[in-house]
Length: 342
Image (cartoon, rainbow, N blue to C red; front, top):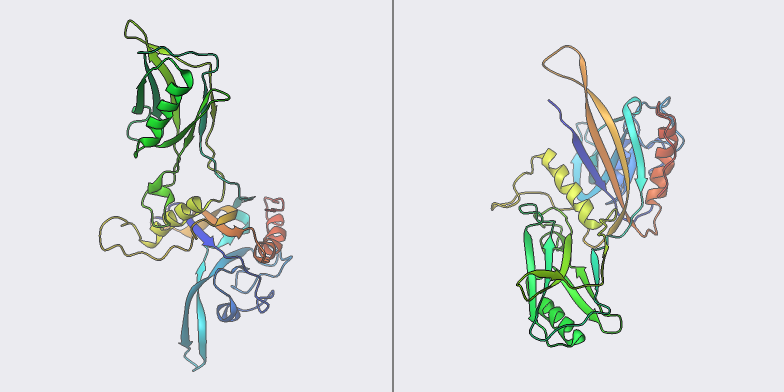
């Protein structure tokens, strides 16, 4: 039985190869497509002519040229040299396209929190505590805490700077701290999580630090009391088309090729095509696929997702050439989809 399958095609910043004009055969594609080039093909796997509609071909494929080439001799003795291995999308049937959209790259941003102590005074001998409660730990959301304590000297700037110094001296800190004496504000800025933002081969899924901060003091009865004028949070943003997100999409799609082991030696898997620190525009197509199930005599459908990621900023014609093929065809589908631009 088929289940939801994701296919991810990852391009490079290249121009459309001159030989890949509308109607060019798959043999021409294999012999001329360059690494990272993405092309739309018709139902016969010839290059889709820009302006084609579902009346011309009710099914299309997307393909990506890889970095692997080979020589091939067919049964008639014709030899093809330096043919390029191609990754194909699942067939995209016009009548079963549900949605398609383009998503331009937007940068991620980490959470930051500003704690104002303007107008406050500290007392010598009183304990002051900065508590940071982390909410992104899936095992214990809201239960993982770092606390930083100082005993007051009676000078606000000195005591707040001491708390910040404690944070910065902590090797396991998940935020960076600073204190501005002119505004009396402690700023906490989340740090990237190294387990998922270091390499394309990171095991963990991309995530970002999420926290709440509290500045308190211990009163004469041993109770905690707030010590701030205001606390202002700036929320984290995952952005769109970051290399970490594209890597994760590529990683999850590898499961449909039988790649499940990522932690036990030996790890056998293809090299990632995502490039660390690259930024990507995305085109996403949600569609169904018809198939004949062996357990009955009627045709079933299963949901599929096809994602195209192309790096930006771009000096090549890769995205423009692809959208020139796809926009008219998508507009002619029963869903009459609007043109996409990124």
